[in-house]
Amino acid sequence: MSSTADAGPVLQVQNLRLVLYTEKEELFPVDGISFTIDPGETLCLVGESGSGKSLTALTIMRLIELEASVRYEGSVIFAQRDVLTLSQREMNSLRGSEVAMVPQEPMSALNPVLKIGRQLEQVGIYHVKDRKGRRQVRQEFHERAREALVAVGIRDVDRVLLSYPHQLSGGMQQRVLIAMAVIAEPKLIIADEPTTALDVTTQAQILVLLAELQKRTGVGLLLITHDLAVAAQVADRVAVMYAGKIVEQAPVEEFFANPQHPYSVGLLRSVPSIDDGKSHDRLNAISGSVPSLSALPRGCRFAPRCVLAIDQCQSERPDLSVVDSANAHLVACWRPGEMS
Ligand SMILES: Nc1ncnc2c1ncn2[C@@H]1O[C@H](COP(=O)(O)OP(=O)(O)OP(=O)(O)O)[C@@H](O)[C@H]1O
Ligand SMILES: [Mg+2]
Image: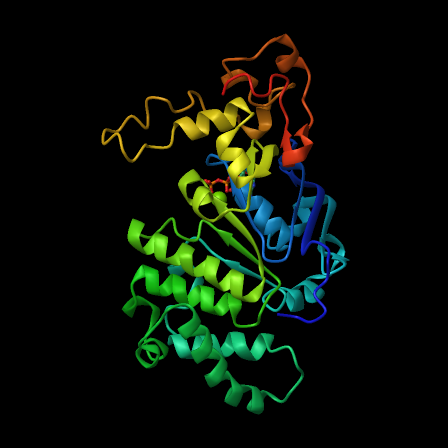
């Protein structure tokens, strides 16, 4: 733990907007979102497929390709700097050393023809913070890599270091990727559906592992998931994204006890209940689908699917605003709380 821990948030996203230019039009897949993450805090960003979660992560990491056809608005303040104004070179040095990403598909993020040991070594050499010679770094690496692998719960470290990715299970690959993410002791980890490709047991182990690492190191975690059960398990705060906007944000207990947005309520009702034994999960799922980016409703973007929608919802867009200041609960809805 750093002795000079800053009091402020580790990440501050303000009115972030991602504009994509296509041949015909401008699209706003991330459209004016704001949130912060404190040191040691886990914010879960949840929402259906296509709501803009991954693009939010990629924007913060500045990993969106085709820069020429992309524009950013707003700010992403990290380590007192707005990452949206950094050059790719400056961003490269931030990425991995200060902010790291754990991807959804472990296999696609690992190099299939390099042994795990070599891949960890490359990360180590690239991101070691102090400016020492590479030879020295290489010597240090063995220790660091071992520590990182042990920290992510790998017992047979020697075997893993000498393995190719395909020789490891999906859970092991994801552990390796988390080790790669933490090896440089970043201040923020962004994990985009890090457990989706894994079976339920392994998923739980990986989540516990992330939570433990976080408690120990004080790293901030932005965890993207479409799975509310995951959010319930690990989040400190939950932000619900719909069609490029955050529609609700609250501390985790408050969110699950007192959801205010009809979309959140719909999401919660579509979670399969463990104790009822039958699969009622689809019965209550929200009907319809996330609107196309090129045909967004004028008012509230959820209005076409919302059973509570009134005229105002069709014509006026609600802003994200405080419904309960004592509980830091924000919602963007003209009829908050009426569905719960
Ligand atoms: N390069 C791109 N060009 C144009 N549109 C894109 C591009 N990438 C994503 N989109 C669109 O932006 C929207 C948000 O996509 P995004 O991948 O962020 O969703 P998501 O919430 O991560 O979904 P999922 O849960 O399926 O991962 C979608 O409508 C998607 O089709
Ligand atoms: Mg995604």
